[in-house]
Structures are given as C-alpha cells and as structure tokens.
Amino acid sequence: MKNSYSNIFHFNKKIMRKTIKNLKNGDIVGLPTETVYGLGGNAYKSKSVKRIFKLKGRPIFNPLIVHYYNLDRAINDVEINKNVKILYKKFCPGPVTFILKRKLKSKINPYVYAKLDTIAIRFPKHKITRAILRNINFPLAMPSANKSFNVSPVNPIDVYEEFNKKINIIIDGGKCRVGIESTVIDLTRTPKILRPGIISKNAIEKTLKLKLKNKINNKKIRSPGMLGRHYSPGIPVTINQKKYDGKNAFIYLGCRYKNKKNFFSLSKKKNLTEAASNLYKILRKIKKKGYKKIQITKIPNIGPGIAINDRIKRASKSK
Ligand code: AMP
Ligand code: MG
Image 1: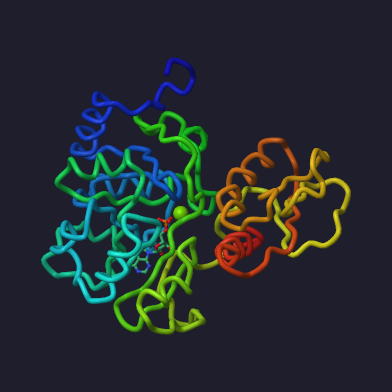
Image 2 (image 1 turned 45 degrees about the vertical axis):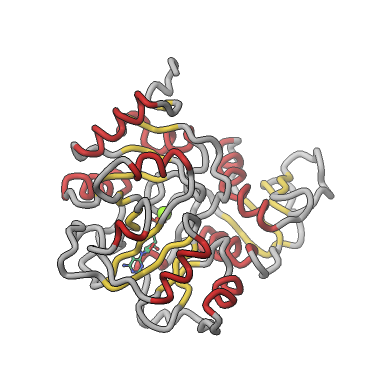
C-alpha cells in the first residue's frame, strides 16, 4: 500500500517472513485477531515487552496476555488443569483468555505477568495471526493495539491512528469479527470471570458443568487491568439514556432513527452480538466526526449485552 499508511500491509508470504524476522529481533507489530487488533512482541524478550508498555503508556502493574498457537506450546509456562483442557477443547482457538498458575521454569519475561504468580494465556482464531504463531518458536505478548485507557482498535487504520509510524508493520486482517476483547477467566481456583466477553458465563458454566461465582470482589484485585476508566473514546460518555438532549451523538439499538443525523445504531436488528462487534467502530467514528459528547441508550444486560455494558460503563467513568 503506497500512501500515508505505508506501514499497513496486506498479508502474503513475504510480509509473513518480514514480520517473523522483526518479532525475533524484538520489534513490535500490529496484528489482527478475531477480538481486536493487538500489539504483538516476543514474550521472552525484555526489549519487546518494555517497548509494548512504553508504546501503550500502560502501567507496569497491568499484565499482558500471552498468545500461543496451541495448548501444547504453553506447557512449560503454566500449570495445565482439567478446566483449561475442557474449555480449550470447546472454545479454542477463540475469544477467551485463561489465567493459570505460572511454572517456575517459564521463560516468559517477568514484565509480561507483572511479577504475579499467574500468567494469562490465549489462542487467537484469526488465520493471519495463527499462521504467524505457528511459525515462531516463542509466544507473543499482545495487548490491544491502543494507548492505555483508549478504545481498542478493530481496523488496521485504527492501529495506525494510535501509533502512526512508531511501529514498522501493521498487518491488514480486515475488520475484527468479534470487535470486543476476550472473556478473561481465572482458572487458578474455582473458576471466575474477570472480564466478560462474547463467550458468556452461561456457555462456560454449561461446558464446565458448574456454577460460576457472580461478583468480582473488588477489595481483592484479581485482574489489575480491570480498574477505573477504560475503553474511553476521549469524550464524555453517558449511559442508560432515555432522552436525546438535542446536540450530542446518540447510540441506540434498532432502526427507529434510521438516517437521522446524530443517531448511530449498534445493530438494526437489535442483535447484541452484532452490537458488540460494532461498538468500538462507532465510538471511534463519533469521535472523528467531532462530537463533544456521547449518549448511549440502556443496553439489555443479557448475553453479549453484559460485555457491552462492562465496556460502556468504564468508558463513562471520568477517572
Ligand atoms: P488487554 O491485553 O488490554 O486486552 O488486557 C488484558 C487483561 O487481562 C487485563 O485486564 C489484565 O489485567 C488481564 N490479565 C493479564 N494477565 C493477568 C493475570 N496474570 N492475572 C489476572 N489478570 C490478568
Ligand atoms: Mg486493552
């Protein structure tokens, strides 16, 4: 691609070889996954990991998810238990992250897991990133490819807008199908969801044949990245809105305000999976159009609506 996006590349063998070479050398690349775009680096190399934190402006206490081609490749890094085997079989590769006990012999760089005794692992489904993971002999530390506290990117141009030319390669894998981050589940003890996602609590309960605990106990932080403001489009967001105030952008479900200026539908059919996949795209679009504020209608708190509400609630926090 020859334009101002000269670091966005279509995927082919040549760019795959270049990407792998860069990753081996400790460089950081922008990669597509089915959830959101990631900022990938060699999880064994301190140079790569430090650069990820620096690029994102991410607090060092917030650990990164480690991405593998398959579960076999994670056996030297984490304790594999029965629950992870069952969930892996059912959902992976796919949009779910498992927190597991770290093995002492693991070669993962300590900054990745923020010196905790656990590691978060995931197996992304996007075929481009799977092809890369398959052909490297190290896992990738890969947070979402946005500056900390911002909305995650779901298109290659979103990644470019976050980091410009600070990264040499952004691979174009199209719009992310899921569009919000993975479900994070702690499997170090009685399973517990730390971040809701498109793979629901119900689906996990059914698969494991057990009831998950409901509330995340905030007094004891189990997922350091789940605190305070996050997913912010950079302008104020108010949620559970009933009345349009006449000048802001208004996000809703359905097609009641079709073609009406300032109104943005997450899903014309009120489908919550589609709504989740459009959420970040629409937040970014509204910001770009120059609106000063966003109102969001009440989103049903069921299925993917739980994950949407988690993200918009954080987006609406001022701190
Ligand atoms: P991101 O990579 O930006 O999608 O965020 C990753 C999420 O996983 C954050 O909320 C992290 O706090 C969480 N996470 C990563 N590693 C761990 C871990 N070892 N224990 C608990 N949460 C983790
Ligand atoms: Mg993130």
